[in-house]
Image (cartoon, rainbow, N blue to C red; front, side, top):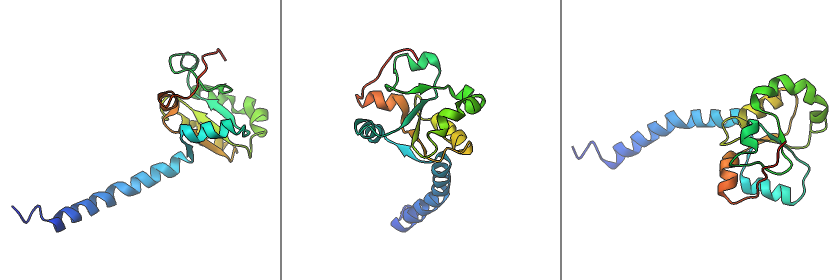
Length: 146
């Protein structure tokens, strides 16, 4: 029994587990693309960097409990694909400036970022943790209607 839980066996098991999990984690990170923490985004906003904040939640979430980041444009993820053509002119001005996608927890925002990349927007990132993390970190929110 002691040999089963030897240091060598535990290290070997850990290495196997890491070999199984790490490639999937790397693949997922590559698929999701660049991300910004709330503090990183706040610093960019404080520095008045040219950004397009694209909130991909629903209207009720945008003005609800978590609110939204001031200046964000509301385009729900469900509508984004259909509105890419209509947004073309606005997005054309952001082909090189950063577009930051935002949702509640960062489940929808990576999908939105991928849609934008496929539409030719090169500089897209998403907010890690979404508005849940933004608000939990005590950062300012607005609840104004879009």
